[in-house]
Image (cartoon, rainbow, N blue to C red; front, side, top):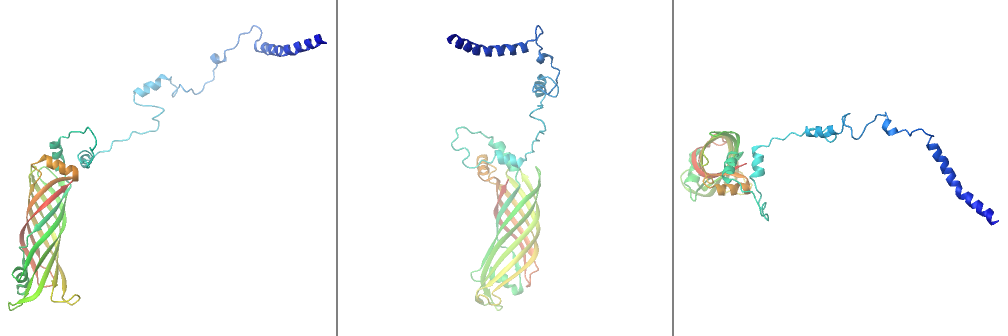
Length: 324
């Protein structure tokens, strides 16, 4: 019984070996050599090492010539945008306060050269001028001149003018600009009767000119400019009487007249002699020049509702703030 069981166990153990031997017999066909299917394959297909049918080294050649078939396919080179002179100065010259705070290193700029560049790059200028009132007021019985020029506690205050000049073109010897501006003036005095007696009523006369025109400038190095501007203008007069209550007829009276103006300026550049101050002003405010002006203004208005004419020439002083 024991031998019988042992023979059965041995037979079961030898069964897998017999099956494996059968598989080996199928893989080896007698004495025939094994066919190398990889070496003799004629099937063609795309290879990761082939670019457009050329060997892999062509990829490196194409990179050397500035093209990459894989990464640059369909991508166009972006053209460099032309940077304006104003943009260059804003990016390089204009330094917001605190930019270099906490930094150990900074670029030492050539301030003299930079000043020369931004002084010529001005896009326009804002003029702030006070003009003394030396104008003549023609009216019935000369009442306006007598009231604001000779009356009791009279004030012939003059006018504050603000004007913006925008350059149309600029050269080394001549600049051309268009201008628009306005102003406000104040005069007052006690009224005078026809017989010459003094009135207790105080008359106030407000003036509001609005100008538009064209102008030229002649620059002389970095230090001086001669400028002239002229064109049409409108003057509004507001009269106020103290002897009438609010809402009464004649308390306030508005009237206006078209006319013209012409002005001439001699400009002195306050920063033309100091490169350090010019650079500091530009880097903190983008102001390219600061001029002090001596100005002569002529104006004429003669079409008011009342028989009034305002004309003449007067003088003043002011400043021009040129900007980038």
